[in-house]
Length: 395
Ligand SMILES: NC(=O)c1ccc[n+]([C@@H]2O[C@H](COP(=O)([O-])OP(=O)(O)OC[C@H]3O[C@@H](n4cnc5c(N)ncnc54)[C@H](OP(=O)(O)O)[C@@H]3O)[C@@H](O)[C@H]2O)c1
Image (cartoon, rainbow, N blue to C red; front, side, top):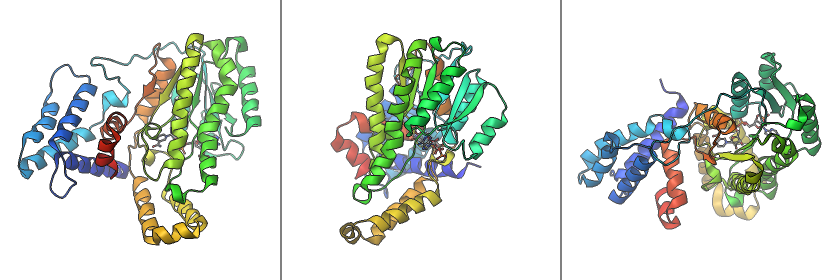
């Protein structure tokens, strides 16, 4: 049986397929939309020949009746729900490209932030299994969090948990000292920094307080900048790697996600500037843009969403409360509750992308661990005119 999160994602993909092929009852689809999605999919799949799945996507454009379209839409949906191996691994658009991982880990040291749960927790374990000396920054180390206990339970000299709140300058400085003094030869520096720690929230612009905007930016954006600046002297010495965990929402915006989106757009801009500056110094900077893995991590859960919603409603200015009304507000919260059960439950594409960025001789600038639905949506949102992409996905 598929996990619940995957069922929700499957239903969403089915809806997309129906949309694309213009099945009655869904929003009006268009042959042009079908052809476009087919072309994008084919180009990105790295196949040298026109494949059967490609024809499955193109043919419905020529089918006039709803029934053949419906059956082909289902075929489309099943193909979309297959694991997007090449895209999940962040393969580039050029056909025939393959990822190559290097095994030369040696005694390289990496620091990952936000290892109490989610991607960070899995990354710490995976990079340790690859042979790295891993410093796992944990927000709850001093409070004896569950993630910390499990990592410490591995009882390995190469996996060291450290108390780290990326927003606190003094904790960041202390971690730099701990890492420096643990390195065999600090003059050779530290190989990698993975800026993973993050928080998320939601809410329309008019529902979101300035305090919330600043709170999210403090962790996701300024935390990333602060950590990077503190560790650059060590990373530069090793001509090492910086991997910043952004999000697909750092490339395309979404309604009701502005407090999160602006921080991830900021991480993208920061990473680009840093990449240009570090290139002559031999440091490589990559960005990983995960799609929807909400069901697999602790970024959201129904209780957290309800707590955010209650606080938001209580703090809304009277005019906003009156103009939008409770019904509208509750519908938005219900939609967010549904979203938090969606997404892929397998985070290995994210772990694989970060590992590649740290170990490959030629790491990619950007990695897109996400399923086809979100990948296609991201391409359309970022490459087509706004009037078109808004019509397809937003309005
Ligand atoms: N899950 C997704 O679908 C998704 C998609 C795109 C991007 N991302 C990004 O992936 C990254 C990891 O998120 P995740 O999904 O793995 O969620 P997660 O399970 O909540 O992991 C985030 C980690 O960051 C920690 N953290 C929060 N504030 C911190 C701070 N001030 N200093 C240090 N650590 C802090 C959290 O600690 P506590 O648990 O103790 O709060 C948690 O361990 C985030 O940057 C997120 O924006 C996630």
